[in-house]
Image (cartoon, rainbow, N blue to C red; front, side, top):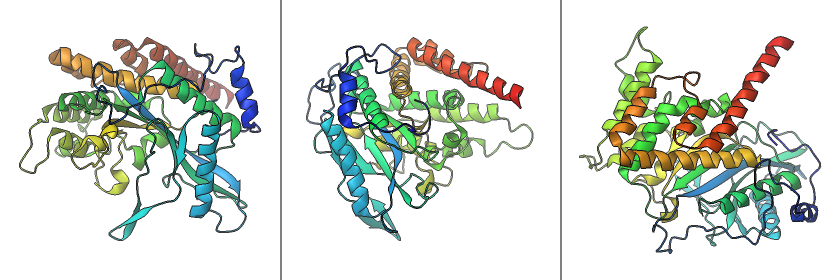
Length: 412
């Protein structure tokens, strides 16, 4: 399941649905065994007045990939053909019992000398939606007579639950088994974590930003380098305004990574909630700190993206989220759901611990800011917050990576 593309012959939808109807058919290696499309996990609706009455956090997931097809003529990658591709994926999901909508055309608006693609949103709050994605490196994969269409499939905003994760797994299997899709280093798996329609408080955003900064090396340890040195998932520790603003006075041999990391953590924890003379509040300052050094459009999508919580965002209420952008794209259902659970769990537990004991939470961060993944790894972090299933999963993954490296050394 972890391969970059589906090399087996795709199955027709009816065959896939028959497979899913067998009671003994296991969807994954985990305890999830059968998904019923009639199951309707709770989704966030901006008109739901009970959305914040003791409800769990919400999440959304975005899948990016390229869809190869035979080019009939040189201009086959037109807007009309792209729309056909998006429509076919929406049709697949609908026929499989998953409500879905598609972006019928690319709507662009002029901004200076450039054109920006307008955001597409599904009309049905429970629907997945299929849209175009221009960040996918289609040119690098272009081999006539095959053309590739960048596709992004976005889930509805689910309240975190087993039923919601089961639907995500089901969609992964539908895409894996019924289509030949291409995944390369330009494709990503994005996870949004929200708190109903009210969003997160300043204290919560500050706490998670500090946690992410402290343990970014651990979170990067399960990602390929293409997701670390990437303009669309820029590292906070090496390519952010926090980094440049807090370390401009550090030079020479003593300009150590540990000093830089500690300086960045102090900057984050010293941000105040109140608005300054420039009108920016605390969340705005945190967002502007996390974006790229250059401040250009290419660098305004850091690995931890707070844009939808900033005052500059004109976000719909259900999009007041913190977004994780650093994960390499995969349709392996187990990997997808463990990453969703990890993002959700870290946000939930970090915010809760900071609320209960702010001093203790900050002491924990300062205690570990200098630790490398070899000294305190991702499973250690997950165990600290009680995320034992996720810790066990990533322990196996990291162990497999270590064994593969040993194998390479002995066979060369």
